[in-house]
Length: 61
Image (cartoon, rainbow, N blue to C red; front, side, top):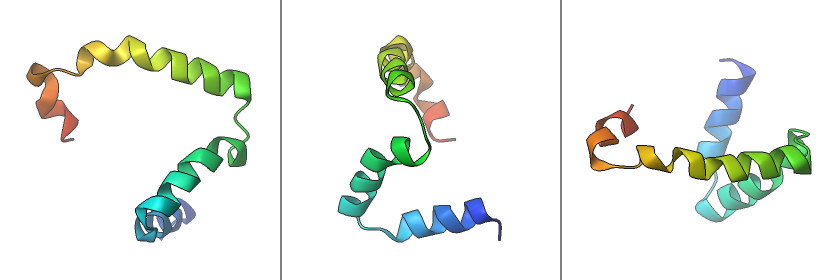
C-alpha cells in the first residue's frame, strides 16, 4: 500500500467533524498560498454549468 493510499484510508476512518477540520487545515499543510487558494475558490463558480441533470451520470465516476 502506497503512502497516499494509507493517507486516504486514514481520512476515511475520520468522523465527519474531523474530516471538516482536515479540509480546513489542508491548504496550509500542503503549503498552498492564500492567494492560490483564493484563486481556486474564485474559479469554482466557472464550473457551475456542469452541475446539471444531463451530466449527472458523470458525477458517479
